[in-house]
Image: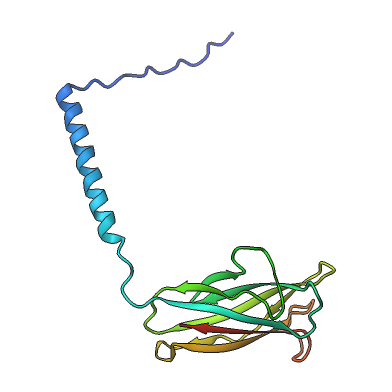
Length: 171
């Protein structure tokens, strides 16, 4: 019967008490320096932070219990509305929600997509090719945006069909 391979010996490192004190001292100094550097680098990014608020969402063919989920893309960063629930019912009582925007000297590029859930459970994707530009010099800014249903062949739906309109502002 073949012999199992031997287990290599584990050697224990021996250090003197002086070496142990040196290691503890180096660890303490590194901890203090790390804390000081972290406190120094945790200052906010210089510049004025703005917010984007989605104020109103309407849908041309809204039935009771029609819900929506928006994806806001601002300078390539995606935000989701509503952020605390999966869906928001469409209507006049939609809750406004604000999203913090980091400083951007050149302003913001804004794009939206939406997922629309009908009462029967079907979900439609709505998109637009529009990329809104919000220059820093025009803030505070109020804008509107329209999204159209994407059909089965993934082309934009006809204007006048299912349209979601939303109002937003940057302050």
